[in-house]
Image 1 (tube, rainbow over the protein chains, first blue to last red):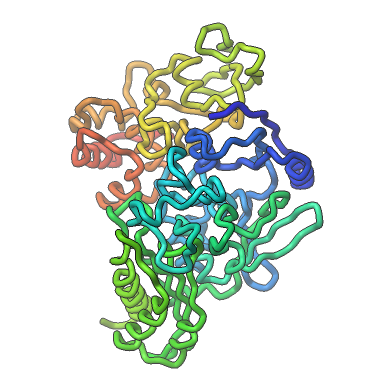
Image 2 (tube, each protein chain N blue to C red):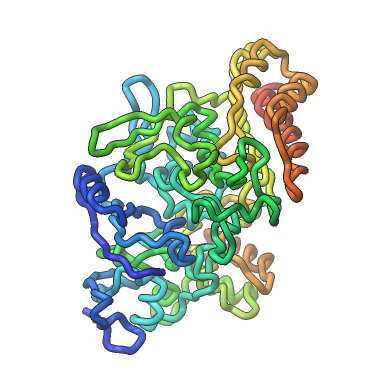
Length: 331
Length: 177
C-alpha cells in the first residue's frame, strides 16, 4: 500500500470541498474494496477523506411512500432493516447473497455501488488492462474469461460489475441521490453504471467531485412476487456467474408488470426493457418465460471460457420467473 | 491507560510516516497508540499491541482469520484502517474470556474438537460470537451460511458447526457480546 495522507470530514459540504480541491483524494467509508485495491497497488490515492462520520447512516421513509437508504448504512443493516425485509425483500435477498457477514457489516450502500470489478487482470498489475491503464489492452478477451461479460462488452473491456445489491436496485428502479460543488442531482439507477465502450476506466456517471448521499427506493417493492437467483461456483461467499432479480406484478395467472435484472453478465446490472414489455399480459408458463429469456440473450456473445453463461442465463431467468410467479400460490 | 508508541523498528517513526494518536477501548480497557494512516487494525493489534491472537491469513478480506468485534459487530481487521476507528470498542480473542473462565464459544470449540491447526480458530470464534449477537442463525444451515466468511484450511467445518450449536443452547449459559 502506498503512503497517503488522511483527513476526516465532519459534514457533507466539507467532504465535497476537500475532494474537489485535490485530484489525488478519494473518499473512504467501509473500505472493503478500496483498501484491498490499495494493497494490490491497483489504486494509489494520495489522500483518503474519511466520510464515515457524515450524517448519512439512516433509513427513512420518503413522502411519496418510498424508502431512503442512507449512503453510509451498512449492507447488513440495510438487509435486516424491518422495512426493507417487509417491503423490499428482493433487495434484502440480493444483499444477503453477496460477500460474507463480516464484509456486509463493514460495506456501505454507497460503497456497494462504487465497488470495482473483480476481473483478475484488473487486479494483476503484471498484465495489461484497459480499465487500470487505458490503452494498454485487455488481457481477459484472450485470457481466462470464465467470469466475464456476455452482454454489452467492448473490444476494450469484458469485465463485469460484481454487485448483487445493485442488481436488485436496478430491478426496483432505485434512484441515486448525489451532491457536488454544483448542487444536488438524482441519477436513475439504470444510468448510474455504464457500459465500457472506449472508456472502460470509467465505471459510472458519478463525477469525481460528487458524493453519493442516499439511494431512494420507489414505493413499489414487488414484495408479493420476487426472486433473486444467484448461480455461482460454490453456494456461499462467491461472485455470481449469473444472477437474476425478478419481480412481477400479477393478476391471476397473468403478468401485469415485470422487472428483470441480470448480474454477472455485463459491466453494469443488465436490464432489457423490450423483454420486460414482452412479459406484460402473458400467462406464467415456462414457454413464455423461455421466449423472454432467449430475447434477453439475443445479442449475447461468449468468449473462450464463458459461452456456457448464455445458456445458463436463460435457464436462470426462467427459474427466477417461475419462483417469483409461484410465490403465495397453492402448489 | 496502556500506551503503545512507535519505538520498535517495525513501527512508524520515520519523517515520512507521520503518526496520529488514537484511542481504542480494547478488551475492556482504553489503549492509546500512534498509527500511520496506512496501518491496518490487524497490524496495530499484532505488531504494536502484541495481541497476536488475531491472525493474518490472506490480508485481503477473503479468509476471515483476522475477524474481531468492532462495537460488538464482527469485522475484518485486515481491511480496517486503525486511524478510522479512533474511539471504537474492539474485542479480540484475548478479550473473550472472563479471568480463567473461557467464553462459552471458546469452551465449545474445545469440547467439540472444532479445530486442527488452530490458525483460523480465533477468527472463527470471534465470528461465531458476532453471529450469535446478530440473532439471524436458527438452524445448522443458517450457521453454515452466516459463517461462510471464515475459511478453515483443515476442514474442521462440521465440528465448528457443532461447537456453535453447543454454545447457542440456552443451557450453556448466557452469551456475552
